Image 1 (cartoon, rainbow, N blue to C red):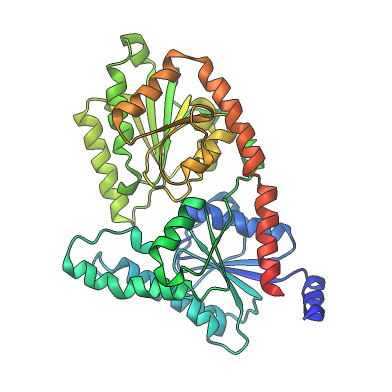
Image 2: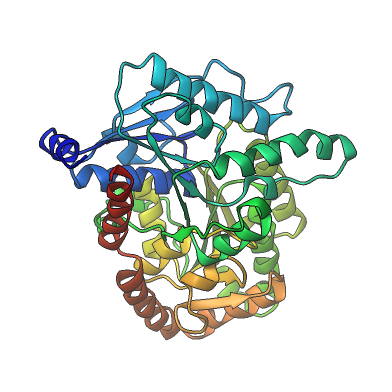
Length: 412
């Protein structure tokens, strides 16, 4: 085994393949791209395999990685339904393609989101090691409002739990997710997944914003920013309702200088994105705040940096978020965060120091927003504290070293 390890190192390190269901724009995709970049920096030969990859809708770093596709011929849904089943089938097909048709010889696999492919990776005599990164149990991400839906999900829930337990190493993104993991997967109660916090590529955020990119920013003194995908579970309506509530707390001049940007991942192929975008515009009109709101869809990294550089605060509205990379990005950019006091933000944000943790109520969010309008120095002091916290606890160096050690342990 030692000789084999030395041979791999002489050849440039182990070959680590990532299997991911859709390499678009989101928190899970951000982590996968960062993990791939981290392992490549440590000398690993890295490939990302996915059924779907659109170079026009991805993180910029993904364009510098070896990304390959297979299994995309299978549908993502059947008449708009069965997304979970189709995702499982696509990932099984992807795993079979990599093992049987790609001509590649990976040493280890990193899977996330969909665990159905793990048994396939264990079928062959020269079985490869599998690390599974659990962002959150998939079965908790969908509602069971009918008997038919519960019946449909029952075998898929069992499959998720069973196949997750087959991984050689299981990591989660927060202590919150670790507790939910144990509560949800009863048969895996003997397992204690390790926590590997997501990190940031600091160099990307140190980019100097060009004037043409900065032009997208509304020239308002009190610019609030929300960054989240256009999905209902992100509760973006809370940001609009908080803005409406804030109006009654400000004088006419302060209100005229206030603006909210709702920036988020958007895909025309995802019907929920399309429907929710229209719903949000209707809510803004109903609340009569549409003149104070800008909807920005599928923005670039440069645009995000420009917005974070210009806003006084980030509104982070989802409840029980698994971890949430946006608060880290904001705090690194010295931008305080107002977030719901549940889930991952409890581990990333220090209440009253790097931002505010509130109940998911418009009145509480508006009260916190008012403080940044009335007390200009608050952004500077909280922003500095946020930058310090990210550098100390969520550095890319710590993430890279821990991830590499997990992969190295698997190879022994």
